[in-house]
Image 1 (cartoon, rainbow, N blue to C red):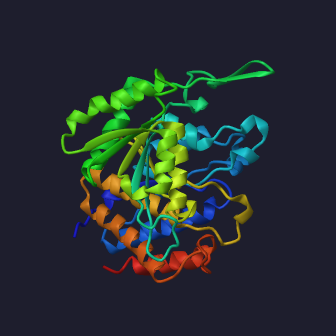
Image 2: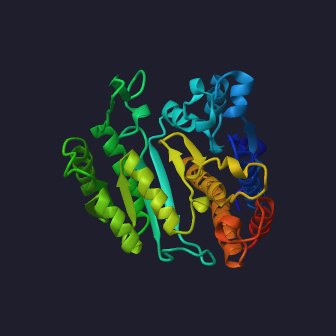
Image 3: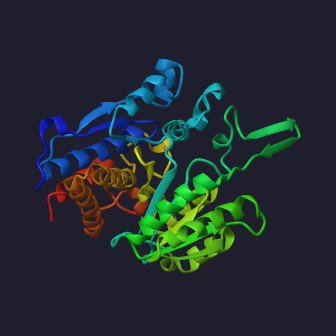
Length: 361
């Protein structure tokens, strides 16, 4: 078993966010601490940083510069959900998107796999959506200054969609590397039949990368056909690679097929930075009620540990991540779940059950 010296402790940022954020972030931190301890590693050094409505109240902005600086000094971080729709109009920026842009987190990796014990519309689903995170049809990614969505007159609204060869190559490599370690198939999802320049560039660039991975099969589908195919035969897919908006939509659809958005994990990353962030939102109606499902952020935190294990050649972190994954699966298999999955467990009760099972092999 790897034993690290005290000076080698991971330094991880922790950002509560809004709504259920403080509850699910605390749960993710708890299971990470337990898994790291069981593997005999030096305890994580946590750095708490503000974001969201509390940051507006204290600092006058949802994303203080001190938070960005603080995150830059960590090995990675866990980001709670934000509820920017409820912020005052002058503060409506989405902090998560701003963090992704600031640190160049170009890849959003969203796995979906059904768990035994969880009622899923597609119990055989086991796929990963690899979403290009830096451009596409998301207007806040497309301009150096201001938004890519604008109104030339009050009656006309326009939006700029951007696709570049460099970003498409980068995300294609992420997808092919991932597929090579899984079942060896990549599906490129696009809409080149009606957007031949932007989506055609994305599709063709992904195909141009494919020969570098001779063991991986590759095909492509239009996004509307892929959505229908995903509902009909989700087990046909291994890794789907697509642009920002399409990836957001398809991964939410896949997550629901796998049981619930409440268990949908994701990792935002570049070659040098990574951020664990659940797919779901802040659910302000559940805030403070101890009813939120913490699984998505628990599994996202495990993804972060696995990314750090690869980057820093720390196999014990992979084992810690595996412990979290197995503990969540074992808890579901025991019939324990939160209300969104038809269970009776509270957030804290479910966290305790997962924490106990982290000790199991």
